[in-house]
Image 1 (cartoon, helix red, strand yellow):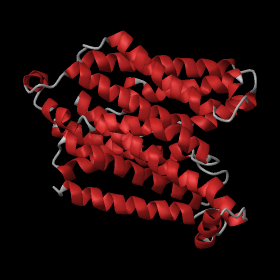
Image 2 (image 1 turned 90 degrees about the horizontal axis):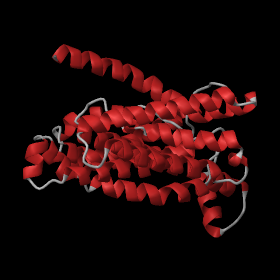
Image 3 (image 1 turned 30 degrees about the horizontal axis):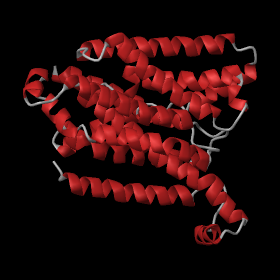
Image 4 (image 1 turned 135 degrees about the vertical axis):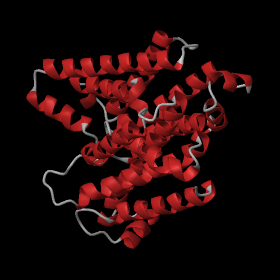
Length: 329
């Protein structure tokens, strides 16, 4: 077990290094010092434009999206007391993706620049409303999981229906590529749209640490310690919807980050779900920034999608996790 401040500080320092590498690395060399100097002076030079319009939004979104996915994964695993839980298990990721797909399908995505992320955010809010309409605010953990599986299945079915009925094969290709997840060609507008909702979601989830620690002793014990379980579930699901819905709306569906990172870091913080929240967010940011750097460095044409890289990393980890759980009985 490592002291949480030391672990958080180490991860934050690694995130800073990865952020700098994300700014420095690209398909063409860039003099970062000259680019920052020109950007701060307001000069519209090519290095300043590349930095402000391309690389800075990509690096910022890599950190924000990864932090949201890692934090939400740790929060969901603590709430549901299920090592295989992640934001997708309660349908948030799927409904956010469906909201974005519907903007493609109806043509709204081309109407104005922020239609696509707004559609994703609307889908995440719809997931929260549908989840609690099905399960109710006082539902048990099992009922909440079943409601989440139902919401996720509905989102998957509607996404498949939209793809099936799409009259334009190019639109289908665009939707499929978007669903694979990417941080390419994003702007600071996407950052400003997602950041406020993410911050609110992070605050809701980070504030739940003591209650999640109490929940490890069982629901009855947690109630006796003053934890209001219905309020905790609403707080965490709403927090995850705000953070993950915003992430999916600007970056597409990026899987496995919320599942893999908490498992890697849990032994280092003594298995306490409250102590895991912040470090999982930083670990998720580090993994996402690293995967996005790998996407740009790999000599593959066309560029691999970010969700494909995280899936290639996450799927073998999931196999090993299931094998370990089976072996431990």
